[in-house]
Image (cartoon, rainbow, N blue to C red; front, side, top):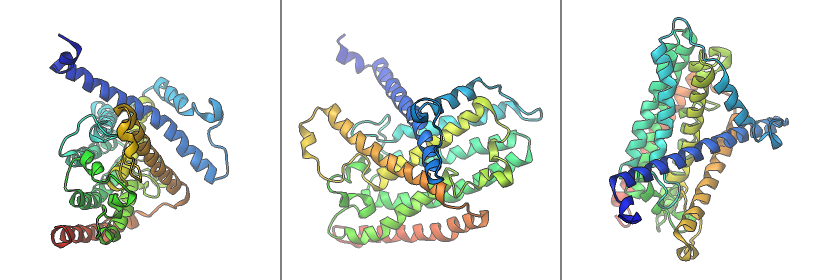
Length: 358
């Protein structure tokens, strides 16, 4: 059996898939280490202080030091806690956070599972993520984590609705639930990106709708990931530290890694759905003569650059926007974002049916 026929077998396919999963997992974990450092550095810069600057050059190894500290600390479980559920909750959050990356296209052909219903898969996984938070708050057998988990569940469910309707507008523009296809439809110049209406002679009409939808998606992503100014589940002055207040050591680390993995995934999802994903903002015919791996890496650099830009925006919002009250948070989601996204779905659907080229 030659090498090519081996990789076509079930065992070969399994090894390739496991290798892809391991590569993406390692990339995400390394990216999280430095993005967490960048988050702290940006926050420190806004406050005119240095931030982490002791461990490694310019504090570059701070995240790894924190990782070792959490791993080596003792795991403390409250006496009245449901121990099985208490330990299962952070594992569920961690697994679901990384499971969502299975359908995220990083570059041409760089996706673990290129399924036709990738958007529905993301909906399902993100909806299940709330269970880890509820389980963690309930199993702690303490009123403060329980209240924090209830707040977080209500917040995530509320903003998932508006995120869902915003993504429906993207699906209507692209005509596909496949994230790879959605990116491919945005090829060419930057005005072909979904945020600017997806191109075409009448794209300006759609852009008037899609630009606010991109803004709503970004703000909803902040609420979905419990980031400031929507970090009500973790409001220190009210609930100490939210649903994970009773956690320590590795279980707490799993919750934090899951939260940041979701933040980075939202940054990547914004770039994929609205800003062309791996597509450059201008045509790149010269890549057609490149080696396929080099061309894919060129696309990956564009995707990663856009992801970094949106993560920078996440960090700046955390540094400069004051926290909302909980009633303001709910009012924004149900009375502003939900009606706006519903109207946008109707408008884009009408444009696709009755507009030019229908």
